[in-house]
Length: 474
Image (cartoon, rainbow, N blue to C red):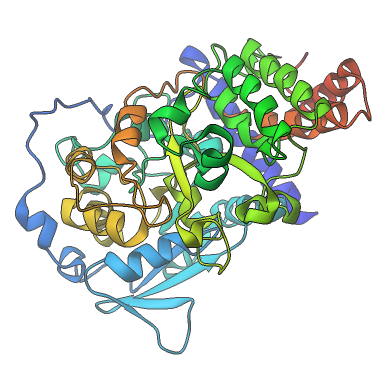
């Protein structure tokens, strides 16, 4: 109960700061000047900045422990593989070193909101914590970034000494997600997460006579065509998706309004189109209602699962499609990528500096090296099959005939991602996105499985959201 209460207190403080004051949002405590978007011609960071070892960046009087809070080991593996001067601890996987600074990885899985609950409780104690116990870096995802960005718990990157010119090559949407209500940038990311539709080459050749991405795109170019193609696949014994939840992000990224308008819960027309289309697919036996990440949902990563496609960004094929498992489609290079019915993004990880850190110089160097150093960016693409937050690096790799994705059967999908990322519109993000998206999918499962009427499912959704956010009405 203590964790829940502290998390609720922090959420209340954050929501209050967001809703109060000018434009519905309170000002930050001593906010830094608003970040201004720089032109493409702005100078890149100095060469010395790219190459300076982290231990030289941090001043001698800075802290000797760098505490990093995250929900999995993705950032840890990126640091271990690519950050200059990082040394893993041979005896403790939760520790490492950068020069004479001990790095401590505090990893709490996302299950049941455990990561945010732990982070909330620890941030509330930040002001009174001993120097070596303070949070220095914590990571956030797009769905709840504003919860932290719009508070005094995060530092402006400008206060670390990072300039607009340093970040000139990053994609604008990655900045928008972690920009507070006063226009102050409060985090950076090494990733861009534009999405694509990944489909089985073998099924495509059997059903459509080709696995060429341009040809397959004609079968999924919009939702009406996509739904017609689902019939062809069903007749051949395949599901077009593993679950209705696979397409949810595509629809929800293309809304024209926010989840909450003037304090009232609002369901966008494109969200309701997802409901209509998904119900028809389920009723026709063309897909199922499995929870994402469940065992049933994951069966489609193998040929016997008989699933034609999944939607996701670059990290999805690398982390989620069992490419390392013998016998999987990805392990044999059996997937391909095409644009699909609509552009979208999914996820991403942002690095935030916690207010009160005593390692500001080291955090600055980590941010610059891991999100601005073009050579490191290219290493991450090649070594980790990721899409990185650096326009020149991605454009060069997209044009590089020598780069291909093994999981995608030798295809280079980067040009597709580059085109998609430029069209991302985040104007309808809000602090309520995570809760509303989760509760909506939970409620609609009852409708899709014929355990509730549509009106009953909507009522379940509204009540669940109001319980989570008592300040809202419907």
